[in-house]
Image (cartoon, each protein chain N blue to C red):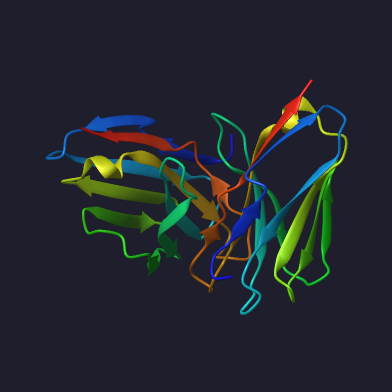
Length: 113
Length: 111
């Protein structure tokens, strides 16, 4: 247990569906992250929130919409996804950005049909 | 080097062997260098965060060194055990907001 939980662990959705991924951390951290792990590619940073403010958006398509209502919770809202969006989505948190180690959740395995 | 590069891509060693692998990163605008271990069916787990040139960190049989001037870090495992089998990732904040991961070195330790 890393102190970072993610739900659901597995998700299958059609291209017209809307779904949300949830991440929660119980570590008192101030930074939270969404990463995407596609097959045979390095981990890709999607979004960063620091003190609930979004500080990075790595040119992620608008069909992915993050939300950080407080420093303990992070959501990733999904709508009209494409099959190539199928991947493992990992959430992480750290005390602050960059120079502090990140704690990762177990991930959500997403399949878009 | 604009991205983070790791070598080798994969490594097979016998139990008891010592091994090492490399992470190369841009040497300008250095903030920190992270090492993570990612075991199958688990979450990535932080090993080290290194910030100073010449830094050397150790955790049990695993150690890491850092050269920020030439842009590389080595991870060493002494006396590899089967439980060390995992993918070892390094990550580099390219500015104070971004984090770039290497593709990883997949280590398999045979009993």
